[in-house]
Amino acid sequence: MRLAHTDGKTVTAVVQDPSTGEVWYPTGEVFEDFGTGSRTQSDYAIAMTPYSGNLYLGDFPSEIDEGSYIVQYYDSAVLIDDNEQLITWTGSSVAAAAVSELGLTEICNWAFIKVGGAKEARRIASYSATGDDNAQLCRDVCPLVRQSLLQKFGWLDAQGYADLGAELSGSSLIEGGDWDYQFNLPDDCLWVIRQTDEDDLSLEYAYEIKQGILLTDTYTNTDEDSVYIEYIKDEGTMSMFMPLFIEAFATKLAAELASVLNPEKELALRQQFERLDLPEAMDANQSQVYVEDEEGECRCLDARTS
Image (cartoon, rainbow, N blue to C red; front, side):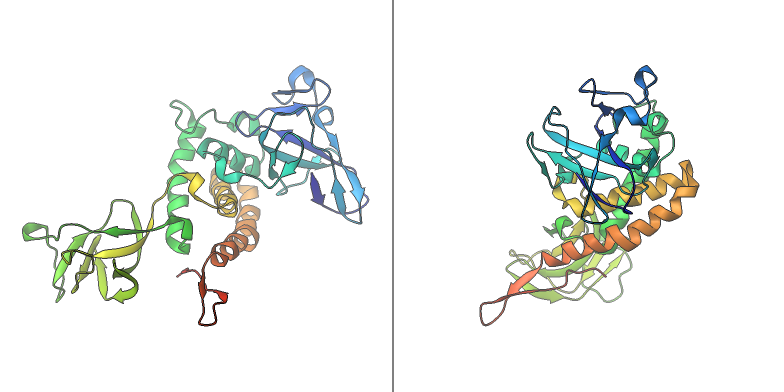
């Protein structure tokens, strides 16, 4: 475990299981609810050793099973805000966080940790749990946060292609001006990137979107009776996304939750999202796009983000 923090401080770490909210009790070598047996933060603290200026290092407890865990850092007994880390413990070493293995339950609990405050009261056992106000709040907020991120920033992990199928006719048509053909968009479509050719994806065609209908003058699928598009899908499976996207998603979700649960933390979370998590995710998103130039060398292209 490692943390950059002001030098000369007493820094400790607490390990938390994101699926249950329980914290690691080093003496008993077990995960338990925070405060069991009247224990305090110091009972769960793992020492961090100063190293090279403002860097602190600590050993992850070897008794913990393999998996993904959240590490929170404290300056004395005061939580160092916005420095939670999600890591993967292999059983013998700490690896980069396998964030994409998390489901919505774990991501929501991670967001609650970022919000701060009465964490135990806000922990959810399941994203789909009925009769749980916090789970319902997550279900109210999560889809809009996810959809807005996907639609606005054009994540490569959510891009796909589709043949739009049968052309609309009769009473299904909308007032479309001079366009010749109309097609329904896929149910999971958030944003059409472009109309392209199924047999030559380098081509693009003119189109317009009205009332969820694509209007065009050109058939572009292989059978020459429909339209082929590249689009952003409303992808709800978190394993589809890179870890940095999920981290940005969790911070954005935390900011929205904080507007209801902890307004004093909302601004800091929005700033963290806009200034740190989102730019890092966007850089990683753009770095995935490359082509081979005429000399056979690869060069990066900017991913579509408009």
